[in-house]
Length: 294
Image: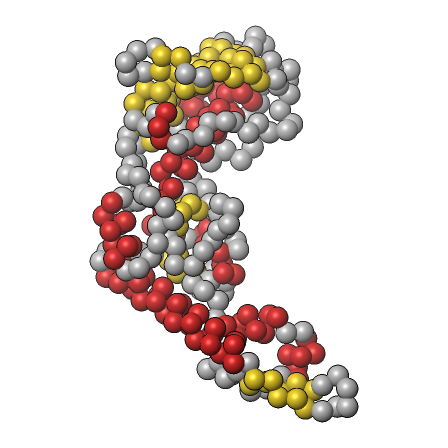
């Protein structure tokens, strides 16, 4: 396999969990050096010997630079990289594959702001191969994006009102943000309200009133739509038959192997989770509403 690997091309089972290995110190030293310095430098080998001879700018003198700090930092980083690799090996022997990637490979992927960090486990989006979340946030973040995608879909199809209704599972206390960030090109006005109780177990998470002005369409970049047969049926009925109202479930029914057992193995090997892990639970939220008349 060529370097860097195309992580998004790997099967989900192989890319499901990953951890970023720290760069080797001499790689960082070489990146920091200018082209001329790199050509003049000697004595920095693969073993990380921190002595370089660089021609001084004046007098043509050869001035030895002892990179003691780089050597010390390099030794620490190499030890950290080895510990990540050892942890991945231990996990694999326990039946859990963790992909160890370099910083260069991680640059292909999408992480939350401030990430990735070394020695922290990340879990991959099953439908979007380039997106990763800290292990602890995986289930919450994944469901949040799925709800957001369903909302984007019905709004682009011309919804005049939408009620997001909690049916089962995670509710108000789950920390899921449904403050929809609408695409700037979407020709609509939105007002929202929240917190209407329907029954003891079912309640409205939020309501939206919209004023669509364009024709119904399917927004680009939807990852869940190809996996959701009911969503596809709503799209066809709206586009082909002028569907005037909708009821669409957003479900979280699979933990994708991100569970308490894997959590315990990660912690045992010294790999961090990125927060307090919350176990998956089967969750259903329902979107109800009306479409504008074609």
